[in-house]
Amino acid sequence: MEVVGLDNLSGGFRRNLAATIPVCIGDIRDPSFLESVWSDHGPFDYVYHFAAYAAEGLSHHLRCFNYETNLVGSARLINASIHHRVRHFVFASSIAVYGAGQLPLTEETTPHPEDPYGVAKYAVELDLASAATVFGLRHTIFRPHNVYGERQHIGDRYRNVVGIFLNQCLRGEPMSILGDGMQTRSFTYIGDIAASIARAPLVEGAVNQTFNIGTDQPTRILDLANRIAHAVGIEPRIRHFPARPEVIHAVAEHSKFHRVFGVAESTPLATGIDRMARWARELGPCDPSHFGKLELAQNLPLIWK
Ligand SMILES: NC(=O)c1ccc[n+]([C@@H]2O[C@H](COP(=O)([O-])OP(=O)(O)OC[C@H]3O[C@@H](n4cnc5c(N)ncnc54)[C@H](O)[C@@H]3O)[C@@H](O)[C@H]2O)c1
Image 1 (tube, rainbow, N blue to C red):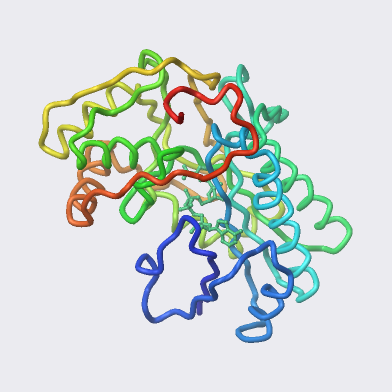
Image 2 (image 1 turned 60 degrees about the horizontal axis):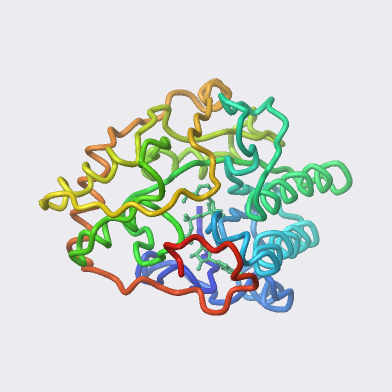
């Protein structure tokens, strides 16, 4: 495939993209920018939509920004894709659509998102179903979880716990854990899922379908912290903060994905973390970013004050 990148660089970096591909710097919320992408580089057969501000916990405090970026921005891209007769639209949703208390998370489970980020992702999923019915826009929706790996933004203090812990280790700070650290997540190495996502438009069984995607292996946050310290080569230092309202165990089921896409790679956590730590040590520590003015400061977890 010939690829054109699109990013507003709010959370991404030009250095992460191959120097050989054209990159359009602009915002999916801006319809005239999207038109210029098509007029300068189109037509496009496939659109892969990953653009989002993916800070789930912070989305309570950024309700409007979350919906403008993650929902209205997506709707703009869907409009442009319909208008320009894109053949297949791939969307990165999230297991955040499920909400709490529905384990294990399967695609048959009725989503019940509990935060604005999950609400926006689920709304886009429903919008894509509607666009398929009315305009015939073929799509595939992936619901990834806890993705990590080289080139991830490690300087965003509101999301990506692997990156946050790595950055804290590199900065000589203790790793911050919300609650007792016994909550579990299934950390997914990016290299295990990227190729399947790219292949989706060519996979017949994936048309207008939704898939959980990621590893099956749950890890306690406390164990993750110890593993990361080990990969960086330091003794683990941990500082506990009060727990925030969040899903305690997130266990997604992937049999539908395996049925349609076949068996995917499953990089052991230790291997993936070692790779990412090696890359992060070369990159060096980042200044943890602050979002700026929040829409709602009430009930902000202590860790973000
Ligand atoms: N990382 C995960 O664990 C995870 C899990 C589930 C779903 N997702 C979804 O996968 C996608 C990619 O996530 P990621 O972790 O790689 O995040 P990321 O921040 O690295 O990538 C998102 C990119 O979108 C860009 N962007 C943000 N707002 C934009 C806008 N208005 N216009 C244009 N570009 C914009 C950012 O600059 C960034 O490069 C997101 O949609 C996210 O919601 C990620």
